[in-house]
Image (tube, rainbow, N blue to C red; front, top):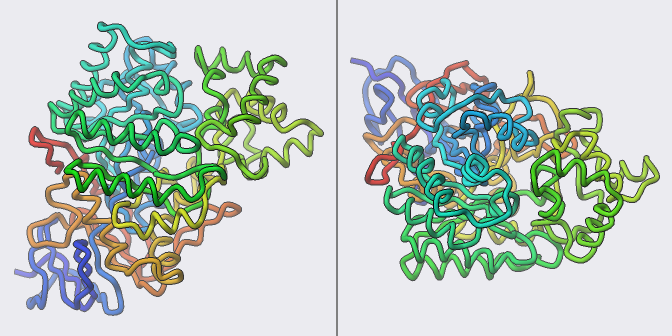
Length: 535
């Protein structure tokens, strides 16, 4: 009997970090059935001569939960070779959404998910009803969402009853198969949680053999202290800790990446299970409101909008920024480093900077920012250029750091083509290959592939993905290493990468063939079992 798919004549990079070797790969019933010099006929044969054949890339850090339900083909990701996305990061998850609190969650997530419909939803229902997509998806329970459901935007420690309520919601998600819990300790209400609250929840994660994925409490002026706080969760709770989209933000903190990476390496050498990931760009992305001091958001969106109109609040905001820089971002060179990305109520400003808007209006930049954010009802998302290229290169070449886009799956058409998103949405993985491997020679191709496949699968405890092995799920990417680079830019982000021969297989089905999407939606919802393994 002929096999389903035969990939012939490519250079196989198996995801382990080993150098590429020539060979064939046979796929049967969604599984890799043979690797090497494989004889025999096939229903479909792919000529991979001149191509790298690798495991599908695993995007460990994404927010595609905000777009996959309305963009199930996941074009901007799968055309990069991504076959699996981990969603629900930074403490932001769209479930659980409890009765009477759906609008609260919808307003809270409006800068990140302006087009996503919200409804009452338990976490088990969320996993069970997730729509068919082109990529696999693993889900996290968001700590900010838990706090919002139980305590709203209260700036205080939880009572014993409130902590138990958060634990019950977390366990509901973990028992259903969530991979773990994410935190966003940089912004309200997650910023109101003290370390003992996170340790208590960490013990719950350990009980279920689940992981902890954290956006550090501070990625700028207190970044090293925040790295130590994350490592302490691994130390006290015995859980896997993933420090997501690791960076040292703000001019005062450039050059600290090597120290932080050594802290993580030392923790691993002592037996702790700690990883980090990063995207290869100098700009980050966040809701504009999160750049302001944390007190501005206290009490929710309506209270924030009222403060933004008050002269005394603006004066306090300006003083705080002058003293400390932007919240979680540090000091930036100027206000042209803050660019409007998505603005649901003022879409005509996408691509403009706060500096340019202030100049047009003849206004102080802080006044222009406050006016703009109020007019956009708090829903603005921005790009912030605040990271050193030297630090980025240090992280990319590090054996400690994995690769995550921190981006949504979008497309060049429809609802998700609106605005000016971060170019990482379209270019993270080919940028690693094209810019950092081929142009900068920062690391060899096999090491880069390991950071995007096998290394990530180990961190996530994926039991049958991330490596090209007989018996593993057939998630496969094929691309020409000499013609695989990002084209998306800050000025023109909606561009797919180069590579006319790029093809992607998900669970044994062709999703991208010669750079064209087939329309197939073979992705699976990945669930963690009681042992912690994910499949």
